[in-house]
Length: 211
Image (cartoon, rainbow, N blue to C red):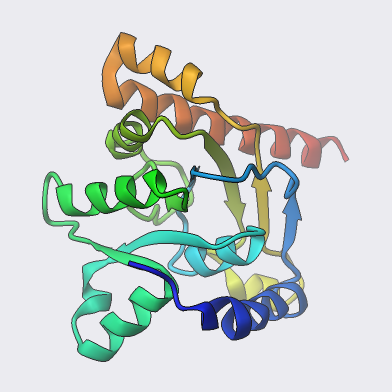
């Protein structure tokens, strides 16, 4: 699969403008982006997450989306051109989505993965699922953790009570993840990745509380 070039030429600038002007989105550590294959992993708090992460990332990205968004021919065409591919949440394995993510990463693409596997309804992080660890092990790709804030409450942002924020952490090397995988498998790797996301959150909260 391939994203439409129109996404970057037309849609991406529109989303970036909306993010900056309407939601005053702040992006921290945007410079931490390597070239080549990459897994982006972070918390999932809203259906708004994928497009605004894409706006924060200085390169083309692909991401999983719930299968209901691919039900009609037009929706399927639109989502595929955005760089999305379906995940069937009622399936225990979702091997199709995992294999597609692996294929994309192995072809040098950047893929967004949510280690929790689903959206948190209260903002608290859910336990990590093994999927992101499995993808990292299969591709030997580095993982860039990120932490999202504000996307779950866009009304507060519009009222200037908060703002959208994407904070990127330190790149996790394939060697680090592989050593963890050898000790505890994909689940342990996924937990390590999610712990890095929590560290970003904790640092941000400490900085905010110290002001």
